[in-house]
Structure formats: structure tokens, C-alpha cells
Length: 183
Image (cartoon, rainbow, N blue to C red):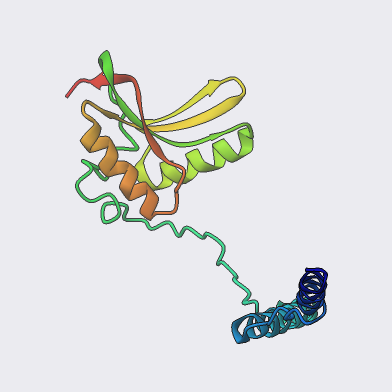
């Protein structure tokens, strides 16, 4: 019985030694190796591209944009510019009499804190449109140049559109008290 025990003990120790020293090493699959290679390649590519981006100079590829200065030429015949806006050739000479006021719409051409600029715009509009229906209003701190006396907003929007075409891009329709003139 001692021999059996001795044989069992030897077998048991041999099995333990086999498992301990002959155990299999973990194998690395091909996918993992490829992933490691790809990740190292991607890292090196990213480092290279970052270095390339730092060296790139975009200034030779920029295009210069030059805008022409706004020049307005005034014509003697302003009727062709203000077609369908009830402009008479001698409207600048006659003064209309105000018969009353009501709520309506006007077109604000400019609002500025510079009196000289406001006067310049007003003179330009007078040269085109005539003296009537152009108003200069001071609402601190702004000087506003308003044009027209319109009962509905569609007529005012039509004039605003025409002013935008003539280069007054800041013009907008506002609600205001308008003058009613005798006919």
C-alpha cells in the first residue's frame, strides 16, 4: 500500500510539473497583429499629416476681392429712374399743401449719427426724386432720412426695392405718421 501511495504521489507531482512548466503560452491571433500594425501605421500617418499641415502655407491660393466704389450718376431726366412713382418734371418747383396726417409707411434710407452724411444722402435723393416727400428727422443720436408718404406697405416695399437697386442697401420700410396732400 505504501508503494501505491508512492506511485500516486509521483504521478501527482509529475502532473503538476507538466501543467506548471509545459503550459501553453497565449497565442496572438493574426487579427490582433494586423490591428497593432494598422494602429502604428495610423499613428505615424497622423504624425506625418500634422507635420504636413503645419508646413502648408495657404496665402498663395487666396483670391483678392476688390469691390468697386459706389458711384451714382445723376441724370437730368429722373422720370426714367422713378418710373411708376408719380413723379412730375416740375415737382421740385411746386410745394404741395398738407391737408392732414394719418398713420402710414415711409422708407428709411439711412440712420446715421453723422449730420454731413445724412445731408449728402438727402441731397442725392433730392437730385433724383425732387424736394417733396423727403424728410430729415433727428431722433437722438441718429439723423434719419425718410422718403415717401404711403398708405399701404406694398407701395413702400416697392420703393424700398428700387432704392436697393440704386445702391441704398440699408433702406427699410417703417411705420410712421404720413402727410396727406391737397390735390
